[in-house]
Amino acid sequence: MKLVAATRGSPLALWQTQHIASLLEPYGVAVEPLVVVTSGDKDQSAPIHQIGGKGVFAKEVQKAVLDKSADFAVHSLKDLPSLTPEGLKLVAVSSRGDPRDALVGSSLQDLPVEGHVATGSVRRKAQLAALRPDLNFHELRGNIETRLAKAENFDAIVVSAVALARLGLQPKAMEILEPEIMLPQVGQGALGIEIRTDDLETNEILLRIQNPVSRAEVDAERSFLAALGADCRSPIASYAIHKNNQIRLRSLAASDDGKIILTDDRIGDDGIELGKLAANALIENGAKSLFKG
Image 1 (cartoon, one colour):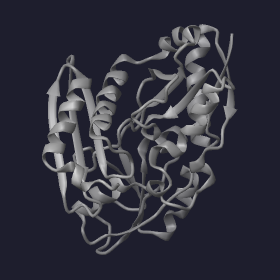
Image 2 (cartoon, rainbow, N blue to C red):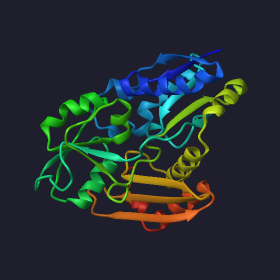
Image 3 (cartoon, helix red, strand yellow):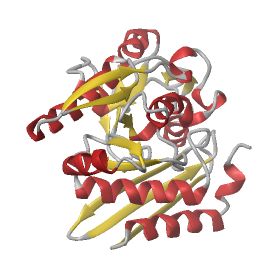
């Protein structure tokens, strides 16, 4: 059996699609990639939060599934908005990779006073600014290889640790930032597979590669995101760990400059409900006033 997978064309996106293909191969399923150029790929200069947030890396890929050019789509879940378009469903989440961020070019301790750090993420900027108000921040766009090539222009850049691992990249100077230092993006490190809601055959096939623990963690984080009503235009973060049949969910909302940091940390057995409770707690503490319109 052959299925067509819609994907972005970056080396990382193609690695991700090939990874999903390798998981499906034991079930006798061959995967043919369909490369889609997204709005985020076309505009490599403007900050992501100015050109539409998360959706700029997903809409065109989702459209390829909706118009039946592809059977399913492979997404980095951190790029996927919390609301799924009508006609699609998030059918599976494969085993999650490293959710943490990586500081490349320097350790946090060795960053000079008033050092220059580049990142395209308002979440990363806000949390670093809270730790180090002296730092200067610069915009950073492009695929992971492009960003690493630009690292020499700054004291450090911030990227996802999983992107480096998946592409076999090992920068000489690098520090993995633990969640206690920098809380990850919703869904970071996880891959999500979307299909048409009426495609029952593909649904059954793709459910075979779902990792229940990763799915439970991602569902908790995405529940928080949906209930909070924000996207990557706002500095927010949420990170779930599933252990002993319970989920610990740590969540954060911040001002752009990192001067205001609101946090929530709770444990429960229903991740989706946990996400809603975390969002409501932050909203009660004034999170909505931190978000851009």
